Structures are given as C-alpha cells and as structure tokens.
Image (cartoon, rainbow over all chains, first blue to last red; front, side, top):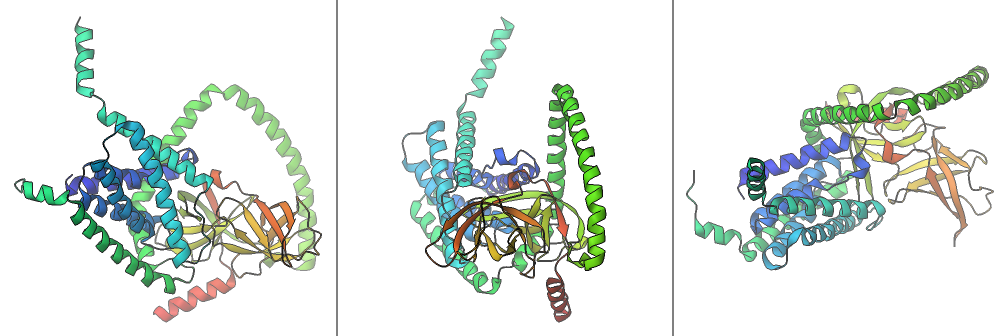
Length: 167
Length: 294
C-alpha cells in the first residue's frame, strides 16, 4: 500500500472519529476507526508500513484524547505487526476470522494502554470493562463487514444484474 | 513516478525488517512517554494543546456536519411519532408548569435565605454552554473533547457540569478545542459531601462507569439513596453541585466504609455541557503562569 493511501486512510479514520464523536448515537458506535485503518494496512502484508501506520494512528488518537501521548501509538505499533503476521501467516480467512482478529486486537489494545497508564500515570489498572468489550465487538463487526464488502465480487454482480435487466 | 522494485517489495514484507522497525518505534515511544510522565502533574502536555489547536477547525467542521446529519435523521424519525410526541409534550408542559410554580416559590424563599446568609458567592458561575466533540473511554481513561478553548475563556481546571450534576474538569486547553477529564475517569477525584449528614469525603471514578466515595468513617449513618454533592474543598469544583446518589454501603476492612455512588449525570447521553468559571485558586495559578511566561 502506498504512503499516500495510508495517510488518506488515517485522515478518513480521524474524520470518522470526529463525525461519530459529535453524533448523539456515538454510544452505539464506539468503533475504533484507527485500529481499522491499521488493520487495512496490515492486510496488505507490509510489516514496515503496518507498524508505521499503527504508530501514526495511535499517536493521532493519543493527541486527541489521552492524558499521555504515546500509549496508543505504542499499542497500535505492536498490533500493526501482529495483524500483519496474522494476515501473512494464517491460512484461513473470511469476514468471521477478520472480525475475531479485530475483537482480540481491540482488547489487546485496551490491555496495553491500561498497563502503560498504570505504570506511567499511576492510574488504577482497568482492563476489561463493558465499554471495552462493546467497543471490541463493534470494531470486530465493522471489520468483518468491511472484509465481506472487500471480498464481494461487485463487478460480476453488476454484470449479472445488467444482463438480467436486458433479458 | 518511481519504478516498481521487486526487491523493495520483498524487503517490506520481511517480518525481520518489520520487527526491527517495530522495536525502534517502541523504543522511541518509551522515551517520549518517560519524558512526559514525571512532568505531567495531572495536566495535559503542551504538545497536546498545540495539536488540539491545530485540529480544531477540522473537528468543528466535521462535528457540524455530523450534527446536521443526526438532526436530519431525528427530524425524519420525528415525523413518524409526532402525534404521540404531541400528547407527551402537552403532559410534560403541564407538569413543568406545576413545577415552575413550585420553583418560583422556592426561589423567592432561597433568595431571601441567600440575602440573609450572604452565600451567593458559593454558587457556581456559568460561562456558557459548550458542545462535546469526542468521547474516549479506554483503559480507565474517560475523557471528552469540548468545542471551546482559550479563545472562549476556558482555563485548565475549569469545571464542567450539566443541570443534573457535575461532569468533570478541563485538563488541556487548545485555542478552539479542549480536553476534559470526566469524573468517571479512574484517576479523577473530587471533594464530596453527603448532603443529609454533612460528612466530607473524596469521590473517585472507578473507570467502570460508577463512582466510589472514600474516607467516610464506619460510624457514619450514610444510607442508600443519600445525595452526594461537591464540597468545594478541592480547589477545583464549586460547592453544592450534585454528584450522585449512594447506591450501596458496605463495611470495609479498615476504618472507612465502602460506598458506591451512582452518578446523577447520564454520561452516555452528553451532547453539550455547561462550562463553569474556574475556582479562584486555579485562576490565580493560571495568571501566575501567564505572568511567568511573559
């Protein structure tokens, strides 16, 4: 994936974060858009880009809403590497596998940030909360849906539809 | 355009090279985090304040579009249940009128009390209403971005509230956007008072969406349902703003009771909050900081 596309992806994640953040429906859609952007880059199988995209996405997230800049950047760099490893090495795929991988990644992100926060900001260790589980589930669902849309043979579907109409 | 190189492609998908980049990136962040941690003292960093200032126009613009879209959705949905809504609103209006009548009488009584006791200065002064742009709930961190900054008179430490109760305080101020820590944050605390018994304690967020009231002795008569309000002893929050109601009282293993408090504010439904004037102690600190930087 080209660097320009990665930058565009991160910008889109930030815009979506603001868009949902201002909406009154945000409690139903706490999707981790930055993690999704990292996963999209990781899907291409490029370790270096995935790590760099993950760390940039995390830094952006930290600058917006965390007390210390670098906690999400640290976590998402690891997740970028991990997700690429999954994309390259794991044979099975499909939307269910992607959704599950993102669910685990979101919980892992939460755990790493909680650990760093406890170590560096002396805040209590809070890892698995209802909010975290809900966010992980919704992020997993969104990732699965994106994967399905990605894999769907849109061109064939469109051609078949046109042919049906012509008949 | 650069010609496509197979060698570059192979190097990029090499996990070893990726691992080296990962280790470097992690080391850089460990250094950045270590540099921030000791100097932070509960406040946001300068870097964050700059970033918030720079991203404010984008945030405001996207927030405006998001608000317009959700209003449009609400307006369309409202068409379907306008009739029921009308009946409900009439009933509500009736109830409100009765409440207004009662409140007017109470307000007159209160004004008289205040005049007599000279306690007017204890009431929090509202600067204005500010929109919430983003909510973050991660690993015990519960924070929001609000659409007001130093240009609107926001200072670090300014309390935020809604009519139902206390919301939190501003920690990092940008030019048009600021970051605030919610009362539910695992590292947030506020001086609190049980309204019925007058006992003072410290309310802390537990990071799971509820609050814990500490430092109340086991001899206390606190009971389930008691109102907990801000005590005004922490130098941040004004006195007498509701925080929540006691949901459970348990005898702890030590000298103090274990009291859980359900917040009076529904934090999941916040869209706009009231910005209160910072306490005199904070104002003095900000002014001292400004004059020192000059």
